[in-house]
Amino acid sequence: MNPMFPVVVSAEPDELKYFLRDFQLEKEEVIGFCRLFWGKYLGKELGLACLGVGKTNAASGTALVALKMQPDVIFMVGASGALSPQVVPGDVVVGTGLLDRDGGYLTQKGFVPGGSWIYEKDKPYFPYLTREITPDRELLKFAKSVSLEAEEKLDSFGERKAKVHFGRIATGDLFVAALKDKQKLYETYDAMAAEMEGVALAQTAYALDLPFLVVRGISDHADDSIELEDPLVYKDTKTLEETLLETKNKQEDPLKVASEAAKSLHSVFQKASFNACEIVSSIIKRL
Image 1 (cartoon, rainbow, N blue to C red):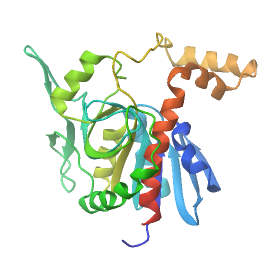
Image 2 (image 1 turned 135 degrees about the vertical axis):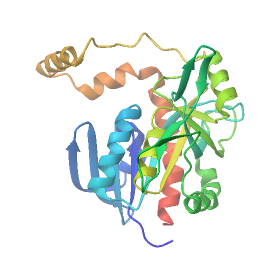
Image 3 (image 1 turned 180 degrees about the vertical axis):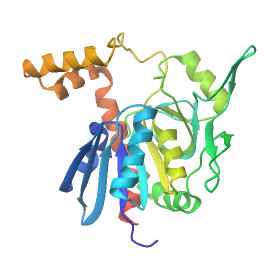
Image 4 (image 1 turned 135 degrees about the horizontal axis):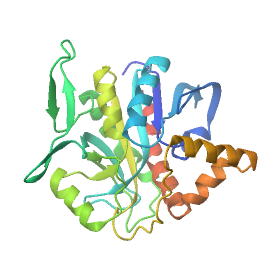
């Protein structure tokens, strides 16, 4: 492969800590909800970006990254939940196809799964419903040749030694933490992992002819074993802004507040993200 300028993105800053350890920052820019970083990693040019949680933030953030940073290839890393019984915490799933588990039709017979709305690139007038979005074949082939070598470096914090899998990843804006929903998703989509951003990055990158790869570390089983408190949902953006202003006046550290809110899953999220980054780092070193 010819030398490339890669950019690694995630939803949250914690998911990029692996790269930030040895990252020499040269420039930083904040646009909307996105934080963009230019610098060097192990002597090579590398971009990093935090896009925010969920499909909308991932799609808009990916477009910003493509236009502002102009990467040759984009990687998404972070944590995810296991859908396939073959996958356990500690494993890594490299996405061979990204599926939108929210897309489809609500009919009298129930939910009919669809996928992503894709257009012809030279005539973007009529949408086509596509089951999954696949990464560049050569990039995926290259990732397979590299990833299996890096498997030995993974942190095995699950029921067995951590492995690298290649398979489908299902994306949706609903956090999965119920066994019955997990089983239904697996039966419907035959996906290995569930997360909240991958297909949005994939669809945006596909539209912009930008090679992409989504690599997810498995943090949990996405089942009843996850203990979640009732989420704090603000009434509207005005209420949120007033709360944030009050927090600033009290001089509370917003990162500390966020960390406390996610304390029960924080450590496994970081471990899973580290494993995903281990695989992507191995790929980047050989680009």
